[in-house]
Image (cartoon, rainbow, N blue to C red; front, side):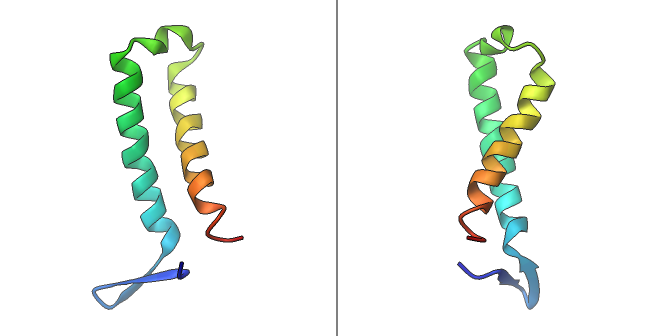
Length: 66
């Protein structure tokens, strides 16, 4: 995968695209977990959401820069 993506003549880092994809995936997973009422098992839901996003983003970004 290239390190930069050309978007209307503007070169953007691939991490920007991965950030957006991770945010959308995190939002979808958040809705599923909230709908299943699984946040009642989590000590700090806001911290869990941030960690979920960080894991998704890192999991997609690490293979890119390996």
